[in-house]
Structures are given as structure tokens and as C-alpha cells.
Length: 458
Image (cartoon, rainbow, N blue to C red; front, side, top):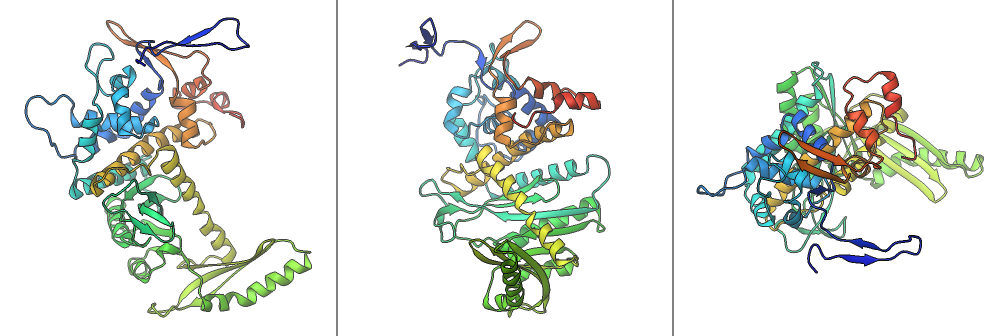
């Protein structure tokens, strides 16, 4: 069947038969692309900064697409929900995607096809990927202090996640915890703002803490170079990062830490009295849930000295539960534990990164090609998150990025190239009109904010 083959359908509820064909002409299904391009510009042309570190593999005068255009095309496609390279074969003709990538929608040639995109992703080596990761970190530094005042405190949320393998890929190995063959990315977010600081790809058989200290050292060094030694830095992580080398480094550098601990018989013995108390209180309350939190000193055999440990004893309908955290903080036990479990917000950010931006679609064979792809997905995350932040600033409730994409980006429209301008005719009935209205306000009044606020069912 050709692209324009007509399909005929009849519905019982409509008086006339329906005919459908892909012959509408210069239409786009992603009218919100212009906001993504605007976000890239306001972030200091992120795509251009990434492209500046991509090695040029092409030679001769026949190069049709600049590296900047290729990177922008790929990042914008990912942000729109097209994670496969093959999608470029049809999207390369999308008139609005062409426009935001620097080409006129009707008179200029099409964008790059899948083979060129594939060669792009295989061009970077380890050094190039490192420079791109540094570009992401520099973006974070600029955005974190864009109000002109450096932050007094930075909270680093470290987390590892799984990326299921797509066949026989470099670095893909079986991981017992996830019970599948994976690549094993390390992600670092700002725990207060949710901004993605870096994304590092690792082999599938590595421990969660593998390379974390090296990444932490680089981040700390750059934070202090940017904002001075007085900036307070703290790390928060789960039990996968509970290794002495991280504690030792943090204590030496004056960095706060709160990290989960894997339970063991000695820790369970420490928490036993608190657990018995929780059981008694639960019985007195006729089986109600009871959670008690306390703290004490603990020294593992691999530690040079004792450290403060906070432990929770909980009685639930399904049984008892104990958890342990090692920390340098001096907060009251219950307050500290409640603060620690807020690191669960980072799991929501990872969900956005992996589900909405398809960051687990690392299907290249070469390891460094997949590291580059991870950076491309991180760039797409930054663009989408920047739009979300702008909307939140004017009173729109925070949305998951896939919801934001449906509400703001996925709008059908007709693109017309005129003599002096390009006109975009958007679907008149699309409910995302309110979000477009909100993004046009830079300093909305309270009344404007009320107009921008979405109902809870939106």
C-alpha cells in the first residue's frame, strides 16, 4: 500500500462514509516543536554545545547536514517521543521539524535519514562523551544560579538504574539484582530542584557504586570552582552506594552524606529493642501500623571508625520492616529519616527520564554510541523539563513529561511557507491552547496565573 492509499471506513453513528489517506500535505503532528526549539535557545543552545564535541567523520564538499543540525534533529525527535533512528526516514520531511532545525519547510531539502543519524551516534569516542557530559554539567551550573546568586547548598541525589539489553551489545551483562542482561547507567540529580546533572553509562555487571566516587569528585570540584569553597554539598543515596570510600572522601572534604545501609545481623540486633517496642504499641492499638525511629553508633568491620546510624522499626499488616541509614547529619532521628526517604522523588525523575524520554532505548552495538545516546536523551529531558518549569512558574500544576508532551507538543497543524514568513495553523480544538497562552507570559499577574491554572482532571 502506498503512503497516500485511501482507506474507506463506515461507522454506524455517522451519516457518511469516511475516507482517510496520508495526503494532507505540509502538516505536522508536533506543533509544539517551536517551544522545544525556544527552550533550547533559552538554555544557551544546548544542542549546539553538544554538537561541538562530536567528531566530524565526513569528508569532502558533499556534506549536506551540519553536526548542529543533526544533533538538534535527533534531540527534538526524542523529545517528541520518537526514540528510534528509523523514525528519521519519515520525520525528515516534517515541515515544522525542518523549520526549527534551520531549513525552510517547502523550498529546502529534507533533514537527515536513518543511516546518517546512525553514523552520527557512532561517531563519538570516550573523550567526546566526557566533553558532552561536562557540557551538561555546565548547563546545570548556569541554570542553578541564573538568578545571579550562587546557591548556599547543593544536594546531590545519586541513583543507579537498569537499561535492558537489546541483544549482544558492548558492556551488556547479566545482573543478578535485576535478573536480566542490562547496561547500568548512573544518574545524578539535584535533590532540591530535580535538575539532571549528569548521566554516566556503565557495564551491566558493575556494582551500583562503581565509578560513583570519581563522578562525585568531578562534580564537587566543579561546584567549588564555580561557587567557592563555602558552598555546602551533600550527597543522598540508597544502599547501593554504601561503601567506605565514599564516606571517607565526604568526611575528608567536609561533604555531608546520608546513605542507606543493607541490613545485617549486627544492625538487626541494634534495632531489636525498638522493633519489640513497635510490636507492643501495634498490639495496644489493635494492629494499627506503627513506625518508630531511633539512632546510635555503629562500626562495620571495613570502617576505620564508628559512624552515626539511624534505624527504623515498623510494624505493618503484612509484617515487620527495618531500615538503616548511615549519616553525617545531626538531625533528630525521625526528622532525618523522613528527609532521607524524600529521595524517592528522584525515582520519579528517573521514571520521567526512562519512560517519557525513552532513555532506556540504548540499542546501539558500541558502548560509546550508547553513552552518546544517553546524553542525547538527557538533552531532551532538559528541554522538556525547562518547559515544565516555566509552566509551573506561572501557576500550572506540575505534570509528568509524557503528559506535558501530549498537552503541549502533540498538536496537529498545517505549515505554510509564505513570501515573508512561515505560518503555522494549529488544530482549533486542541486543549493545549491554555498552555501556549501561559508560556507567552514572562511575568504574569495573579489574574493571569489563575487563567493558566489547569483543573485537577486536566
